[in-house]
Image 1 (tube, rainbow, N blue to C red):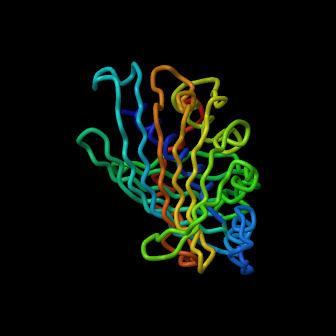
Image 2 (tube, one colour):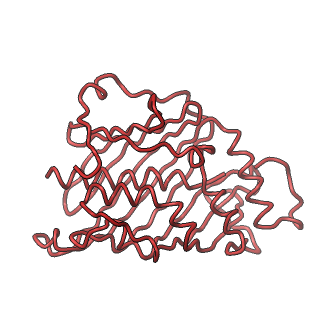
Image 3 (cartoon, rainbow, N blue to C red):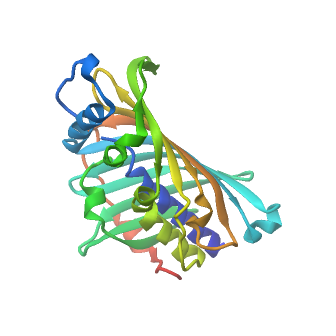
Length: 280
């Protein structure tokens, strides 16, 4: 059970780091002159000026391997999460449910900036709290939502649909494409290392990882509405053959902008949390 909790904590960290990659505009552009790049720059400008965001995430992770032989060799985990994020100070709060087999587990997580150059992530499951210290990546934290940065870096691979579509009754632009190679490594490298530390893997192979992105932007507000991510080549994320991630998809729907005042870790959580060290 302790090892399973460590694996779950690592997978949640994958989400927290990857989820920080889903988003970011200001001056109006005439529709006939709009391009994928000009659209993303507008979204980026608006989100960079924001202090907080609320997001709902649906995450499906398929796994297989020898460690799962007692349950048929494979397992699917479904996470239904609500997340709040603030930029000053940098912090996030996640609450939701993890479903696997016939069990539903309530999960909760706080991530805050520590006194040193590190992020403190508190994860709570089944009434128990753990603490992990993660090296602080300043560049990844400059925006409350970094997907726009990743799209700009790969703009040649991104296509803006010719026609808008309706998203929950709101006219939206749709961008889509695939990020591969070193850009995916930069996106997932830290998270992959965390998973490897928890599952016992020493080398994380991200060379075959790619991510298909579908990104919706409000035509009126120039704000990101949702990000769909489909990951390929995820087998190397765990760094071990005992458990491999055979598939991973995420849909992150933004539900609030500048709606969170602050995020604070309760003192009782700090007092109860048992620290987990890399490789433990």
